[in-house]
Length: 506
Image (cartoon, rainbow, N blue to C red; front, side):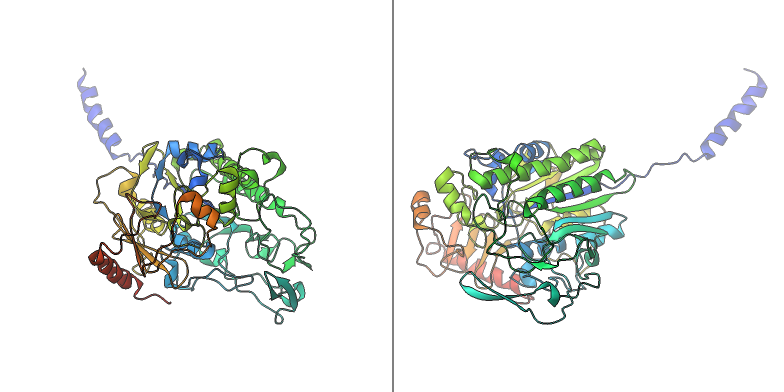
């Protein structure tokens, strides 16, 4: 080698060492939450060996991710569970009831929400579908409409009672979402499409609750009276939302993370599967609607895959509470138990009111086909996603939320992860789960009255003690009350429940 070349080589290596090659920054994972409405634990085929409903898309999601067998919504009804999911805060720290027609926001402006945190982290954020958490409406006068419904005279707002001239504030865009599209709540007025803060078409007529113009496939319409767009067709709601969610995903690029909260109006009543889904199950109209709900979830998952985004997307599937009261008759007629092996339905503090499906897929991080029996709550979603996205939680944010990352990644952790989990719907009945023990401060967890025929079918009996205690490992169906045998455990759980309830607004 020549002496000249020996002089050049060190200079060449020096130049290379001083060149800084561009380092590609890791794009945080996209996040999609698909939130079903009034879906029971037993409605997923992969969780119910006797199911009469095929759910291929959600079953496939479970084989690709982690399925939780002991997951809970904060409440047994709609609005409270949604608030809890989006804030990491038990609903009862704010209120127990739902947001009624034209009701104000469930939120305070000081609340810190999951989309707000993610937006600050650079995420594009969207809410598509059911909101049911209130807006700040402007009214011209008191409700001028009146109709007999459910045995009483109900006042309701007519189109002329509402000021439609201004954007409607206090909704998703004021809670951290960049984009919203939906009809608010399928069975609540106004029956119209809202995009961001504006109506696509203004309601000019009032819904006639005694003449909807269509038939349901099971149960009742459950519609509240109020303003409606001329020609509004409830059968178009789910298909329209599905297309909008797919379209929104198709517009996304791999270089900006996004968060989609896709809140389905199904399989909540009205039970209205579209024609192409009729007969797809062996559980009547609800079964077909449930099959369509599964299909919709599949469309979203396929859209992620088609766009090449699925490998860097966390998908969470769950539901806001247990199944509606029609599930009793459905079980007796079709032998499909939407509540699975659990006692009770929507509204109940019985297990069936809040024990919900919960699946998480995170390619490369979660072992495919894994199952966790850990007790978790939907309030845990906020702390978990904050940890995954390396987002600092403000001190006042997500006070009831636990980080589930160690469970998801299969890492070592001390079980139970949650010290305890509070179960509640309305203000008088409370449950507390700690480890295998479940305490109820009442002689029953019932709100949705169980027919005697269903009690006989499942072997349920009423209890006579003032409080209840169950061993959920041995008795998930809540048939054996152990309160008289474990007075010390009752006292421990009563005291702990009181500690949790300190600082609530109730």
